[in-house]
Image (cartoon, rainbow, N blue to C red):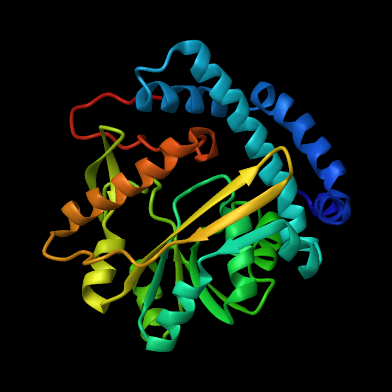
Length: 296
């Protein structure tokens, strides 16, 4: 992105952050209709993921699910304007946080906290709402390829209180540094980052390259793993972020791969509650076991 487009991007997101809820929803509906047509490669990825994960679902139902997914995805993009440029009062009114007492209890106990946040559509809204609640937090951050976009994203995600954006190059070591200081870590567990540090763990019955970090950190640091599940109601434009109780006896006596399989089953169960809310545009099955062909 050239420098002259940076003010335009800020202006567009700023407008989304200031406009009324009905206007936000209109923008979401418009973008939701055109996004599958404009992003055909991503539409192919979503269609492939749904076919792999829901083989018993008929094609027409999967296509309806695809359309609803892009509607939610478009709304979440519009609402980055709200999260990154809207007033704190608007954000608090739009994004409901439930179960935050679990975090307060763990903080009072001095227990390291790993907020286990799978890739749901409302992920950015959840992160923003949690940074309004927590005085300090940390999360992994992948640098954007465009400098101007990267600056806007970093400022948006670090807008409230003290947020440590840990470069993915620092990996688990960077997260552990903050856990040692008692800083809760917002951890995104379910993306395909290749073979290094991963194992092929079933996800919807398909071997998926999955980082073992959550289980390894919980074991090494006695960290509490706290599920954070977020959802968006496209009809109202409201978000709900649910902070669950810490997982019991995790990882227990399980090895990292078995413990990670338990986490994948947790994600699956939450996805099945409303499949359109999951981030299907990601190539979750990009890395294949040795000898298996690519799926995309």
